[in-house]
Image 1: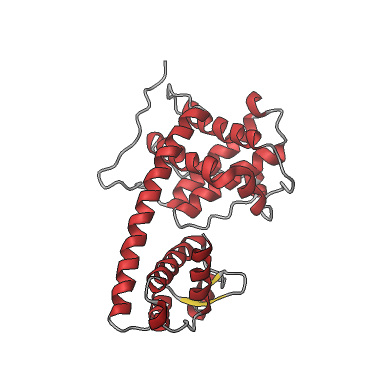
Image 2: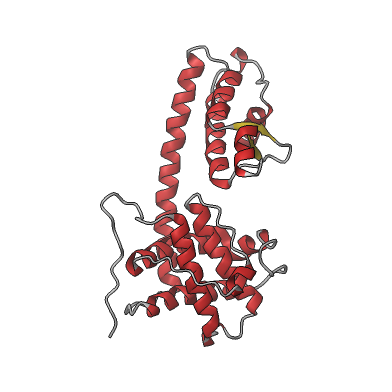
Length: 273
C-alpha cells in the first residue's frame, strides 16, 4: 500500500520552488517516462506523446512567467537534470495547472500552436492528448509511491472550480481598474494621456496591426525579442479593456474620439458583444 496523497498547502499560498526548478524536474520525469514506454500510451504516436509532454511542461513555465522553451530534441539529449521538488508539492502543482490546461487551454490547439518546437504538425485526437497527460501525472504519483490514481472526471471537477474562481477574480480586477480609469477621466485626464502613462508603466512601445504588444527598445534588447511575453501582454490587455470600458461609459456627446487606435478597437469590440 502506497503513501496517502494529501494536497500541498503553504502558509502564504505560494510554491516554494522557482519555475525553472519545476520545469527541469518535470523534464527529467518526462525523460524517464519515455524510456519506460508505458503500455497505456504505447499505441499513441510517439510524436504526439512527446509533443504533449513538452507542451505541458512549457505551459507550466509560462503560467509561472518563465519562458522554458523545451524542444522535442531536449527529451533525448541524454542530460540528467538533478533539480528536485517535494513530490507532494510537485503533484499538487501539476494537477492544478494541468486540469486548467486540459479543459481550458485545449491540448491539441496548444500543441499545434507550438509546432515549431515539437514534431507534431497535424491534428490529432484530443483523447490521445488527455490520455498522455493523465498517464504522465499518474506516473509521477506512482514513482513517488502515492496511493492515488487520478481520473479525467476528477481533473474536470477541479477545472470547474478553478474556472469559477478565475472568472470572479477577473471580474473583480476589471471593476477595480474601470473605477480607477473612470476617476482619472472625471478628473480631466484625456484617454490618450492615460494610455500613454499605462504604456510607460508596462514598457509598451507599440501595438502591431495584428494586435500583438511590443516592448520598448531597452527591454526588447535586454530579453532578445520585441513581442511581449504572454504574461505581460495579458496584463496590458486587461488594462486597455478596462480603460476602453471606462471611456465608453461616458456621455458620447461630451467626448472626442481617442487618438489611440487600440482604444477605439476595444470600444468597437465590446459594442459588438
